[in-house]
Length: 234
Image (tube, rainbow, N blue to C red; front, side, top):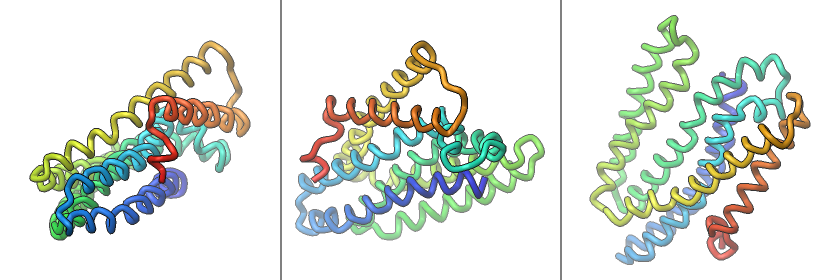
């Protein structure tokens, strides 16, 4: 779990953190000038870019965990780590949502809210992990479940505070719609292609082909539906 699943999770988190860290001073400037229209525009761009990375990764980890790990690790480890990565996959989108909400709160001057929500999340993580991992029915499977529960708890607290800014909250969820639709469609196309057009034995080559197809289809759909554009990236 700590050698295979966690590093793949942290890989995405590093990308998301770089986006939200760059977003924070932009949002702070707009909030300081009371320019909420530009605040919401920048927040939506940051949310779309973050979800553009997080949502397809969540889906690919969840349904193709073995192919993901097979690129870096040997077969025996992959067989053990893949189910754990699949369970951890939802946390990729959850931590992205939490980071975006807390970034908006910090930019708006609500510095204590993220601390409170994260503290509550830590409490939930400790309590749920103690109960689940300590239970023979769950064992190590309880670790990724506890992680997801902790993020859900933190998100609920942060969203309650952010709900005072209704436009920002609407903007946040709108930012995830197109990445969710395009990545879901890309996943359906990939699964259809693998089921009806070609079959590959499990290997490094098949993993690379699977990932490449998903990536190309997702990027193509993103360009078609406007999720990805040079203007938005700029």
